[in-house]
Amino acid sequence: MFHNARSDIMNRMSQKVVIERVELRGAAPFLGMGTLPSGEQAPTYSANPDIVMDWLCDAWRCRFNQLRSRRKKWDRYKEQLVPIGYAVNEWTDRQARMECSWLAAVPAMVLQSPNRIENTEWWAANKRRKTLKKQGKNPGSMPRFKKKHERKYFVCWHNKGANANYHQFNRHHGEVVIAGQNPSQYRLGGQGCRWSLHIRIRVSQPIRDYTSVGVDWEARTLVFINTPQPVERAMTGAMVGIDRGVKHTLALSDGAFQDLPKGKLEKIDREIRRRQKAQARRVKLSGQTGKEYRKHPSNMYRKTRQEIKDLHAKAHNIIADWQHKATTRLVRDYDIIVLEDLKLDNMSRKAKAKPDPDNPGKWLPNGQAAKRGLNHGLRIAALGGITQKLAYKTSLTGTNRLILVNPAYTSQTCSQCAHCSTGNRKSQADFQCQQCHMRMNADHNAAINILKRGYDHLLGLDEAERANTEQDPPEANRNHQASVRARKTSATQ
Ligand SMILES: [Zn+2]
Image (cartoon, rainbow, N blue to C red):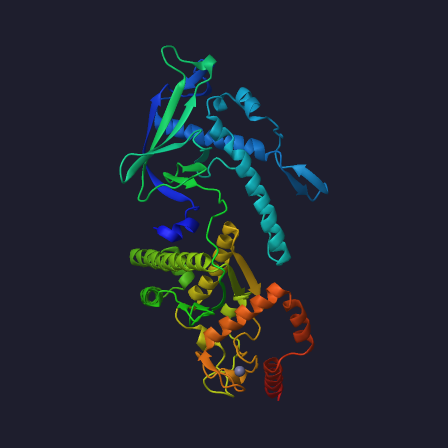
């Protein structure tokens, strides 16, 4: 739940609700021409809401695939782009209704919706593949047709009240009404042509503005979808640098810290470990390998496995909730947010030796110890989500800006005199400058350095600085390179 000042940023997100039941009122919808046992063609109708919902899902999928058939894929044998459909379909909505009788009575707001969704999905896939290719990963295939065994689903546009209107009955119940009408030539005697589908839903919070509803008839859920619009917020004129780390999740340049709910996560972590140990014991007692055992596991094993899954989901929810709250707070309070452009893959990678900040001149065993810490993977993942969410939320407001700066040496440089040395770090948490003897929390110091780099970025100075550092690495870098070289030579001797 989001209230007051926070809601101005959060109210643009979709809301998912559970469908309780569906009612049909008015005429029985015309479902298309069917074949009688005698082989004759005859119009079919149904007053059964379940059948009508199935029909809407099928019709939506059919129109979706008609539109998809126009798309082209690269044929490596023909060395050219060829349509992905066997028969390319260029029908307009009107033509589609005429040619396919089962589309004739589908409401316009349902029939039109695949157009935009198909378009978005296609170009999103294009973009995703390009990015993955650039990263040297498997780009995956382009989206094809929606198959019959896929989820039963359809979308209906709201279009400022044109259809799919929501009415609230009381605190916890409401309905979405999807209205339609049968074509005049298929009007049943004694009946009108209009019908309406009342989808009863259970709600737990007020339904916000929406542009369309998506109905998942397989899961019996309905989503109020909202295309994000620019969000209004008052400018604060404030700028902040943020250091993300494992010790303090977020350290702000004005001295504040924002941390994940560590206690809750630690508790879940303990619960998971306890269960994992029990699972390992069960496998060991069976005398089989893990792979063999998992083919026919005991009921207890299955049950515990589900519990572990649920605990992981719980931790994930706690982190996501915290991320949303923290990022919304930041977007609301600061106009310009500066973050390090962290390579999180490197942070979670194992077995990388590091100097021990608590014992100068000594090395941590192999870097594993520091990373084996509690929930390390989860915490790293939480850091990535912060960048993503901040990027999304700042893009919505139009008055925010997110700057990503080079993270090198931010933790070793003095924020007061810019002296850069590994010796500045007394311990993981403590920073003490060897030159000007300034003392401060290490994460806070790093956040100030990040803020400074943000200023440099705004002034266009960072390009010049990058050129400088490439020619003349700071002392810390030289020290590091020297120590790496020393270790290499000692290893070969
Ligand atoms: Zn200093």
